[in-house]
Image 1 (cartoon, helix red, strand yellow):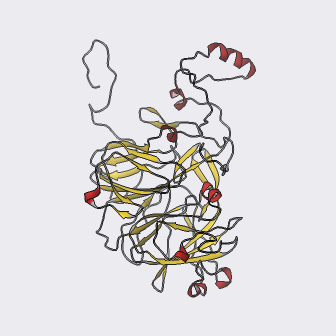
Image 2 (cartoon, one colour; image 1 turned 30 degrees about the vertical axis):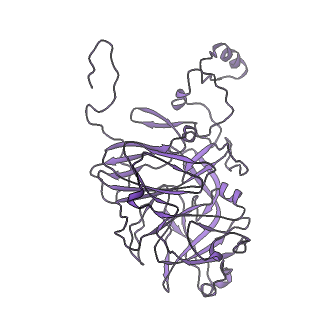
Image 3 (cartoon, helix red, strand yellow; image 1 turned 60 degrees about the horizontal axis):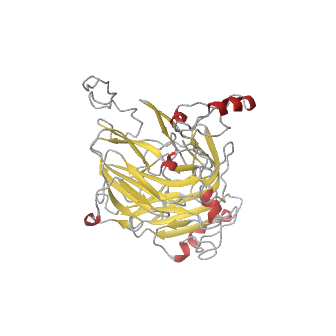
Length: 434
């Protein structure tokens, strides 16, 4: 649910902008909407300004704005937040306007934007507009292109959106800590002509990673490689919302990678083309069909396809460790090693000791065992045929006939037509679908 903050009124509340924009200082700050939950919000149709086809932010929302003298004004508040990663786990992060990642900023090619950034963190910050071509003094690199924004102060960034495309925002101030704490957000600049690159459904999400020890709430910000929570929009499966689309829709999915490694993003049941990168749209002559695209560190990618194959289709990172939750990295491999005698002796020391791993880890998907508070199982999720045995960067594309044009509710599990589900072979009998 979106609520409203009180206005932070008057020029006394604001330290003038990244480039000391005097004409903005005399105005009261625009309202800073606050998002209190992690549900996917409906697309925000533009109430004024140039028309465009809005995006849907996975487990997120779009930041409202006001128009003032031809400028589209937004208000970001950098602050500590609580983010539910999935039911059963909440993280203490830093973000914007109540959530991590912050709200998506949507505008149109040629828009003049003015973005107020209020700092409610315990340390200074900035905002860098990743991929946006703008004046150097608005680029948001603390110490290089502007002073850092001190706690309690508000800076102003203003520039014209010169190019349509897919971009991000994040700090360039104590960057390792602030990005490891979840400070990031998405920017979508729509084409001036709404008919250009038009799709029926347009989804966005950011890829991020955290290292949060079992039983704790705050990320270990000095971690460089051994992350245990791989997220889309600071959510892990089964907490990542599905992507419901209508049969026959042309679908775009935009993603940006702010982790420390690359991610091969794989879609089942469809072929797609990469139609957008950090630098803008890819001409049709330069595209080719794929089912997996690698998104490197700091990159954005937009993929498009026609949803012509009904069903529930897995959509995930193809690095298998990135589809696990709360995963330790120092476990020995005991496949094929009997633990029967060990378990008997361990049970005398540790009552209810559970041996695992001698036949693989599949039993973890259905196993219920005591976990520290605020800790997710390594793999979980229940599907129509049993445990899904996933976590991390995994969700489903749900292709359905009969969905309403603007209906983004979860349609439930797919009902397979008779004769289209894999089945058990019975020795001595001819294969027959049941």
